[in-house]
Image (cartoon, rainbow, N blue to C red; front, side, top):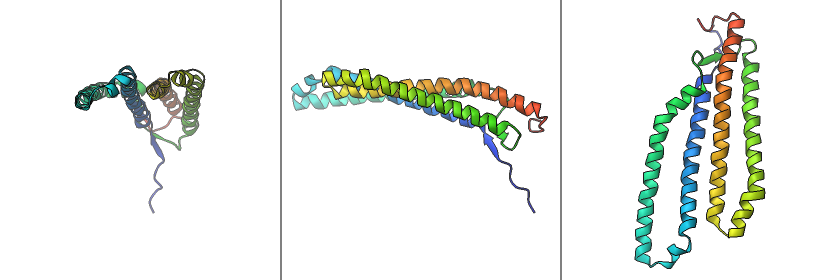
Length: 188
């Protein structure tokens, strides 16, 4: 008979991928905000020009959007590894969940991240409800409304990223201490 497989969780990969996903959301949100502000600035001027110039403006804005996207990808490639290394400290990758107290520590840190993320989302919902949505409605602008949504996505992703970075480092330290305290042969 074969022994049952150990129940492992790759904490390093979990924290790194969470931080990377929030970084991608931030990049998309910034592009969305720039595009919506540009659309608001151009506004009625675009519809007042003739069709040939509209095509030229669309081509130029497509080029600018692509350049912004490529610059964002460059930033992403440069900083994604640094973000991952900043989120998870050295010495921990896969952790056996059957080790006493490890599952409790992982669950507690996961619950902390989830509650802080929900709090950030609800806070942004209140800001949007009382300030940004009425502002966009008073201007009668869909572009400003999209800007507010993009700003919210950026703010929430940044908040969650900071929470994950702080929790990832402290979770690494706590789990290593728990494993050391249990005299586990896992870290040999």
